[in-house]
Image 1 (cartoon, rainbow, N blue to C red):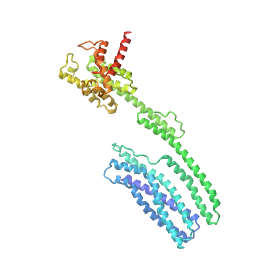
Image 2 (spheres, rainbow, N blue to C red):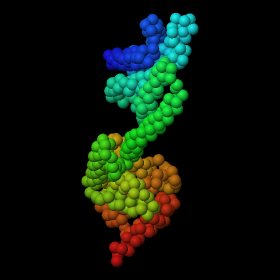
Image 3 (tube, rainbow, N blue to C red):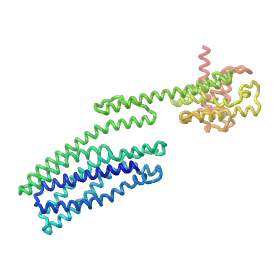
Image 4 (cartoon, rainbow, N blue to C red):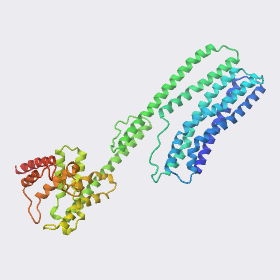
Length: 497
């Protein structure tokens, strides 16, 4: 609640300071130095201003309470729920714009309407010796002064909301506030309106004051306004052009930075190669490039760690069964060659290789007596062997972050499925079997048939290829089997020559 009280105090100080400067310092000075009024009239004007300010404070206070309500509700509640905090943050980001609206509507109208009404009544009653036109000029001046007041309050409020926003961000350490609220103040609009206000409104105030002075001196003002219209037009054009260039000068590097950050969010770490900026943005982009370099280095380190992890797991399995040493590496190499033949792109080939490298990792959970048995397995022992794809999938599901190995799991689980549905563990058939599983099944079978075992010698490659060919459409995917058979025969011919 302390942060909320400080926020209110800051807003109140800003408002009172801005209002006093606008209404009393600028407004009153404008009235009393421009309008030739006698002492009694000046006292009436002061009285009208004071009464109108009371109405203005009450009117604006009503709207302020409505605007502050979502923020106040969070601080008054016992706990912070995500939805209430999101609403409060959104309202905080809207608060500078709402402040401008309060000043230009209840603030301005709450002062101008009572003051103008009272002045017109007193003029008609003969109590206030002023021209009716003076009330119109005063209303125009009030609008111009309120616009400058609104600009100052806008930037003061931008500063005031930052500690409260930081408080809400700090409360999000547990991660429950996951959705960022959108920005509400486009920088282009901010620049254009700011330059327009500070460049044009003082000139307009001077023009109104000059009109009153000239009229009071009984001078002709038509020629003055012909000249003034040209000056105002040139001033507005210059202000808008300056604002346009200033906004573009800020927007262009911000837009580029947002694009690069969006790419980085999608794991595409791109440098800004043409840092052509001569201001602080040059340092920002230099820092961004340093950050991208660090992210790339971390990404490469993580990649190497993941590959090392997979190689170590594969080596650990080979160490348990020396007779199958190198089997996983050979199956991974065969699978990658098949994938290239089938037109897989680089990222798919990488995932296929990693999947094949770990395809038998589940055998770590198979008892040594079963895994290394030289004779025929019993039905019970074969059930242990049939469980290894599921065990392998379960082991890799423990890896964090899960996304790093998620693409490997289907192929590991399904590499013993058959096209005719007689495989294990799920009895999938045809296209139901994941593509990686169908590829690894061919590579795994070929290496198993051609590798030596203690109880048998590996069969010749041509015989193994013949078995693959005869099992197309029943045990193996025909397209995958054909791709490997063609590759293997080329390898055999190359070795023979």
